[in-house]
Amino acid sequence: MKSLSDIAHQIEGQPMFKILDLAQKLEREGKEILHFELGEPDFDTPSNIIDAACNALTSGDTHYTSSMGLYDFRVAAQKTTLQSRGFLPTLEQVLVAPGANSIIYFAIKCLVNPGEEVIVPDPGFPTYYSAIKACGAKAVTVKLKEENQFRLDPNDLKNAITDKTRLIILNTPSNPTGSVMLPDKIKEVAEIAKENDIYLLSDEIYGRLIFNNEKSFLSPSYIDHCKERTIILNGFSKAFAMTGWRLGVVIGPEEVIEKMGLLVSTIVSCVPPFIQRAGIEAITGDQSALVKMKNEYNSRRKILVDGLNSIQGITCIEPDGAIYAFPNITGTGMTSDEFAKFALEEAGIALLPGNNFGEAGEGFVRICYVNTADNIKKAIDKIKKALERR
Image (cartoon, rainbow, N blue to C red):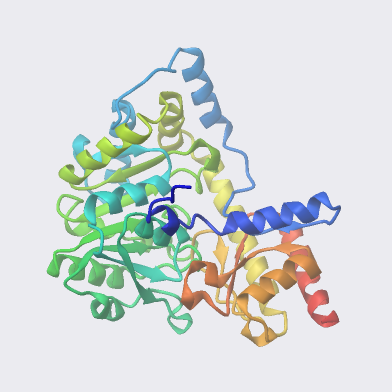
């Protein structure tokens, strides 16, 4: 039998779906499971966004379109960037892609040669690691420290740079920690990328979900307006509850965006136009549903963190953004894997071991507060009682 390619053996995928499979197996056996493992908003997509897609479908907007994206969508993305980040990118700097996940792969594929290095946060989003391996590149990690609120330290970043570094990935607000970098530190990262002439991929998918000091949000794109080395990655899944729509947008240097667009053309042809029409409505239409969802996440965040800190053996820093808490569970005497298994089997709570996000995640677990306040309280109570029985 013929063997697979070397790259095929490097592909890892996303570990959260393995936990989901186990949880669903237990549910089929009749056990009640409360789900906190996936970053999947429990809200439905706002009705005005759905209506925009339906209107596009009934109007015949069901054909091929430009691989770069609808003209109207890219113009809307330009205007939104001006409002939120203070600069107006050219149309040629904007690309529409099938979800933010794909953008990570496209960027690495276009910027990094096999054997070259990509600096990533640890703990960090698993797709970073998987995409780097799938491109034959090497991940170089920078540890995010609990004592630093899980914020990336620019000095640690400097120490990780070598003559093989081609790309730095920055993620704030962070998945899995929920940490938000302070503006002065983001400026330092942007300066480091400029001084070393290294591309900087800024994952800003949670940029609309900052709860503390939201006006302090700063994109490192301020330094070059995405004309030289900064690339903004964004998507609609989280803030707009559009996970199933698979819609993302990337802004970067024109020559980079052109090549990434060719990959979109090669692999998926284009993002369906009716989905892009929904995206236009999402960023230009009524924002009241977005505000309600954000306020609800904020309320749940406080309930979850207070509850976790009331459990003996568990401590949790309050996250400033995103939809995740990253509690320290070392006081329970269990490893991350052991605690996740214990929580699922003994308490009926599905969550993720922190080491799914890198070696520095050992001793932590990730809990998504995309479940109701009542279920969060119920989960806290179940974990407490399970630990007492242990």
